[in-house]
Image (cartoon, rainbow over all chains, first blue to last red; front, side, top):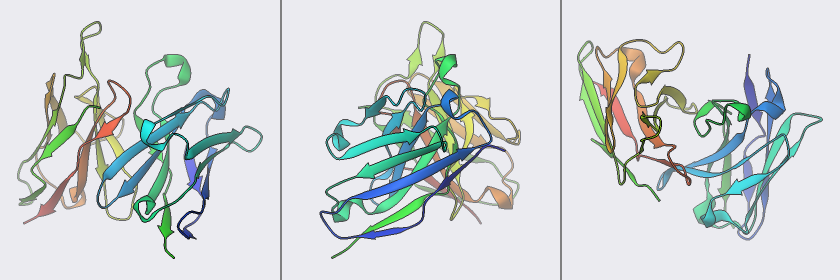
Length: 124
Length: 113
């Protein structure tokens, strides 16, 4: 079955970076966009951006530009999201989520399925 | 950015009764060229990621029970659970995919009375 498995919880100091992995299985990796969404108590669900695993192209939300980098490794069907210059406001559960439709369908931007989430804590 | 506003924040409903959740977008998410509303609904149970329930405002995802239905158009949308079951206790979110940045409502928590 289609599955996204994320790396584990992280504890980081302010100013540090975090890199989360998301390993896909059960489908053709390069056929679907992968999105990143974070969830905080204060801001709720927040879309961060998307990567096309086929060519590595990315779209980032303006708020995160300059701090976020999404990459992929097609040999292992894994997508990575790195967020730098962490502050307490970045404390959240970070989810990867596959797009509902194939890239070829040109009908993107719904999320199904989701990874299990990765909790990022930021504390000095 | 399109702002999605859900109401109420929380809802307490008896088993077997109807639950109604509202979602309003700050601008229309209806694309006139295909007459589709770019609006999805998700269910999130405690300790789990969200799960897609409905897209195009009213199309149920495969495997979603038919007690869940979506309606509305333009800027005003509703998710209805026709007969609440114990397993429906969750937080429900709407999401617009009309334009990036993709945005979510603040969520509605549904509990059993």
